[in-house]
Image (tube, rainbow, N blue to C red; front, side, top):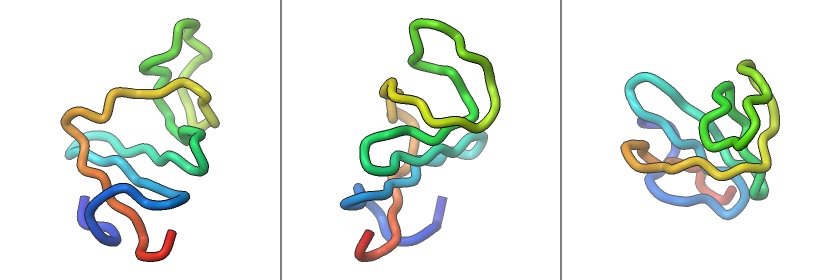
Length: 65
């Protein structure tokens, strides 16, 4: 939750809370959870086109990205 600097990045944003983290890279979500998907495509790390509510998460990014 303390990675990089606060806020939304241009290309990469990491969302984290005390129990989970995921990243959005160029509009695609890299996540281990299927939350937000209409069809459960399973758990495990994978690219997901669906959006996820970011409420309760801290947004961080590396400066310049």
